[in-house]
Amino acid sequence: MKSKVVLGLSGGVDSALAARLLQENYTVIGLYLSIGPEAVGEADARAVAEGLGMELRTMDISRALEEHVKAPFAAEYRAGRTPLPCARCNPLVKFPSLLALAEELGAEYIATGHYARTAQNEAGRTLLLKGSAPNDQSYMLARLPQEILRRVIFPLGGRVKSTVRQLSQGAGLPVADKPDSMEICFIPHDDYGEWLESRGQGCPPGNFLAPDGTVLGRHKGIHRYTLGQGRGLGVSGPHRYYVSAIDPRENTVTLSDGSDLTREEIFCSDPNWIAIDRLEGPMEVAARFRHARTETPCTIFPAEGRVLVKAHVPVRAPTPGQLAVFYNGDVVVGSAWIESAC
Image 1 (tube, one colour):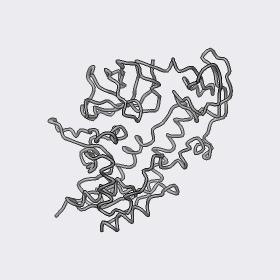
Image 2: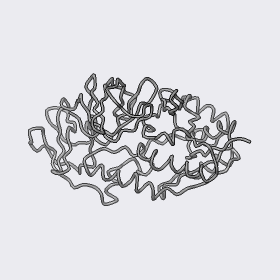
Image 3: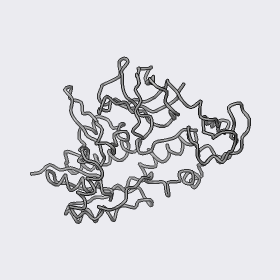
Image 4: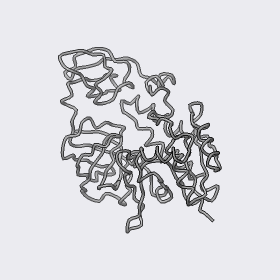
């Protein structure tokens, strides 16, 4: 008898092909996670499940999403930070929901269509590894704890997107040509400012300031800006302006020519170590400070429950609320939330 696996079936091409591949070795039960009125993929998920002859369950995760993702997302922007909702959702909502159904059904594994890989090291820890470039998604998974990683399967980890499209077409999957979604799932039209304001959680207008305190104009609310932003400011001057500081207490946004945005020392909080039990001393790593493939050589140090990151080359606009992910080659060493930089 085949082992059971609960697969997050979103209605997209990635999870659809993951289902098809898993069926070769497992009994697959699909789980569609409904986020509420914003949910748009259930019909496609049902079409995939019916075409593959697999069971599909649905689970309403709207309350958990509100508590663990939406409310913190709004609070972060109001505090002048830039949140990363998917990196919060994965360990707090999405993967625990898959595990809950797996426990109910007696399934040994869970799975998703993410582009990442896992492996075991000699110490018995489950490692998180990059997926095949250029579609690696390990950054967004770097908050997953061991109890989740040891039970997860990523069937697409060694594949590239173009091959996934081809295989999906060859398998006759109904979503083979469906465009990828690049938006945050609960933000309509990718306008998070409008979403915050619709909840009554936007911030009032205030002053744009130059570094010397000179008023340059008016901003539309600090929730509409992030460090390093250079577009949509509506301020003209002797040079292009970039957001270099956000002060929620004074309700101001400081603009500069961008020359003051680089940092070499970054403090991060709440580390999640994956490849190691804990950071006991200095370690050489490559770090990503945004959801991009740019990696910076760094030395990380334990700092009384936090992590001090010393970059070997200056990092542009390390932003509070974003995630620093530390790599040793393809292996994710761990991650921590960016708090401050100097």
